[in-house]
Amino acid sequence: MIFVSDKAKDKVSKLMADAKITNNEEYFLRVSVVGGGCSGLSYKLDFDNESKPMDQVFEDNGVKVVTDLKSFLYLVNTTLDFSDGLNGKGFYFSNPNASRTCGCGESFAV
Figure 1 (cartoon, helix red, strand yellow):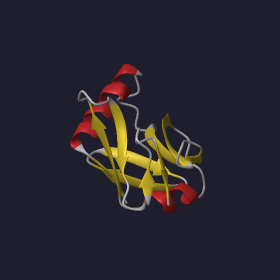
Figure 2 (cartoon, rainbow, N blue to C red):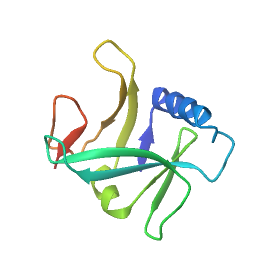
Figure 3 (cartoon, one colour):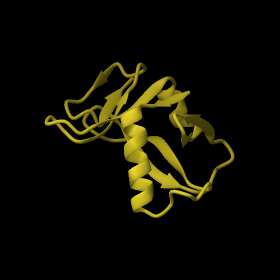
Figure 4 (spheres, rainbow, N blue to C red):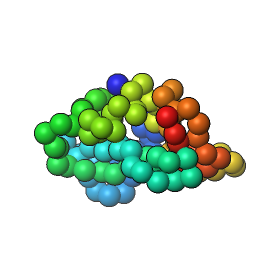
């Protein structure tokens, strides 16, 4: 399962509204893990409307989240959150599978 905090839900909803895809049931939040970043792996977020055969589909807090099977192995029980505080603005992941993360919180290692 991939979880979505209330703050992340609010921001995803706002971004979908800005992109004019709020009432389109076909769109979802795609979360994936890609190589790169200072710790070796990075998170990637996109809106998408095309499912792939091995996609894992979840819904939490009213947000449909889809990830590919390989990324899901890194994301099990991860929570997507959003911070708009003084120390940074943006989405971040609370990933219990990460053995270390970089200072910016955008990359991790297992």
